[in-house]
Image (cartoon, rainbow over all chains, first blue to last red; front, side, top):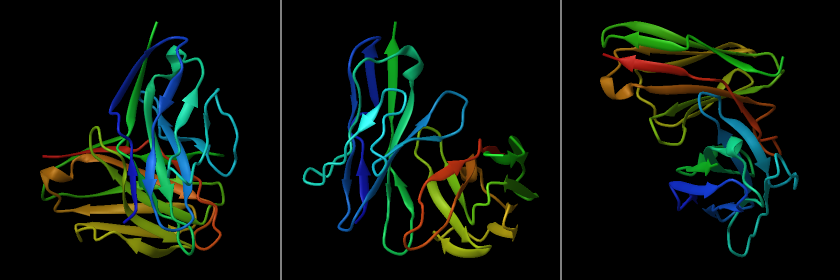
Length: 110
Length: 116
């Protein structure tokens, strides 16, 4: 069955510290992986998608098919990074449902 | 216009009421979605419309009735809801749906529904 696992409900770091939000997925086909972010009182918005291999707001994520992971990383956290982060798996091959992980709340302290 | 808009922002309704949620996008997207998000939980897919036709119904109770009048509009009609249906209802859209489709979904701000 398709599944997305984000093992940490809360990740608390100090400003300037490195950040890694973990995401593991289970899917037998060719996955499409996304990171969505939800800032306080704002809409859910796309942060990264694995096919783009881009860096947004200093965040990067690499798809590791061997470890079935898509961890989100940032070398130096900023207070404005505090938000809820969701990893999402999109099905390929005929239809494109999104399955979200439970989410990780990132709290960056001054 | 690169946004998905939803109205109303907040809705309080009794269990015998009939109400509707509205979603609109003007990005030319041909796939639109309804999600339900309970507090501190991820969004859960309810319905998908592709080219104004219902493509997916995730076994949603019939008290929720979706409607797609045209390619820019998506409605969710509510009737005889239960208190446990209280949640944030999110609308999203994407460029296309199906094989080879662009999966990037754009979300609206949501309607916070309270059923009393």
